[in-house]
Amino acid sequence: MKERAAAERISSAGGRLYVVGGWVRDRVRGAVPHDKDYVITGLSEADFCALFPEAKKIGKAFPVYLVRMDGKPCEIAFARREKKTGAGYRGFSVDVDPSVTIEEDLFRRDTTMNSMAIALPEGDWIDPYGGRADIGAKRIRAVSEHFLEDPVRALRAARQAAQFGFRITEETYAYMKKCRAELALEPGERIFLEMQRALATERPSIFFRTLQRAELLEVTFPELFALIGKTQPKEFHPEGDAWAHTMDVVDAVAGTTHDAVTRFCALVHDLGKGRTPPEMLPHHYGHERTGLAALRAWNERMVLPHGWLQAGLFVIQEHMRAPRIEKIGKMAALLLDIDKSAISLEGFCAVIRADHRGLPDYLESGAEYLAAMQSVRGEDAPERLRGKAIGDWIFAQQVAILRAIRAKNGKAVSIR
Image 1 (cartoon, helix red, strand yellow):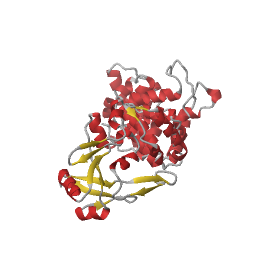
Image 2 (cartoon, one colour; image 1 turned 45 degrees about the horizontal axis):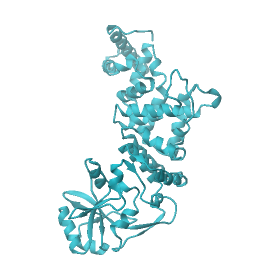
Image 3 (cartoon, helix red, strand yellow; image 1 turned 120 degrees about the horizontal axis):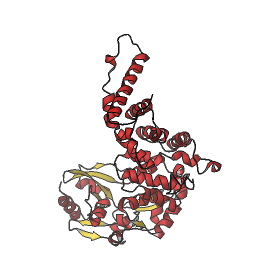
Image 4 (tube, helix red, strand yellow; image 1 turned 30 degrees about the vertical axis):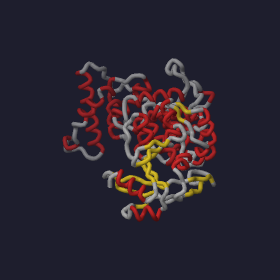
């Protein structure tokens, strides 16, 4: 069904159809809008089902239907009022009936830029809370105290600050701070989802720095909060403490790759510095070991995708050693380990380059070296060899190949 036909069918029955949410916001921003979400007013659920018998109900807490519009499945929700009754995002009651207006529905939403609608089929703009003006001013502003009904809205505001480059108003920061107690009780998967979206932005650090300013970092990402104030040797890290360094590294890596796993590894590479005893500062001896424990603790609290966890553990373990390797055998072993790890060679190099402000030549040429070493096959081993001896022979051949290529290229070689 065409959108206009659906809107006219609803209007003829006494209701009204509106486009809401991110599509409207992005249109105002001048960005390419994507999927449309709709809200309906003035009709009962029974009346709607009579008009659209093919619609499929997908909402449980409140009526949401899936309708095919302009060739795409689209969600149509009924306008609703909400009242806070308990903790968390499920701690509220919902009032859905034909008397709920679009202005009431928009009032319960989080920020003004998400509280606009377009009435169909005429295309009239509904902007009762100043969303267009706030977008023009690059401002994130809560609509009302309804912001507090879902504590994850605080994370969403921080993520949108990173995503759009907008500033958050002081009044909205005050609301965000009030979300602290409930955020500490939120399911880890909801917090992870906002982090994942934040890591996809051009400057992920804005998300984490915003949470720090809103006094929410400690309850959402305590391992990152622990980095604040952990001083480092100035000759290696003039940017400041481990927190500032981590934020710089994650932004630098975000500038080179869109890969989510690599960006996450940049975020956690120095996690162990948060566990450095005060008397050891500004040094962080053994932070690779404590970093492994810190990331495992993070995973206990907020289950991470398996690939993210394994890649993070690998980078934490190897990020200090990788730039210092001089022996040819260890170079070969690390390159082969990277190839078997959950992070790509390109991703590993992006983190090392950002962390150490450069890359050793064996990593710069790592793809070439790996391709040459992987030309060795087990079937080429002498027939007399069995079991582990075949693996040892393969590795010896791979080291010899790496040594020969580096010598040919005029690179320094050393004993295994």
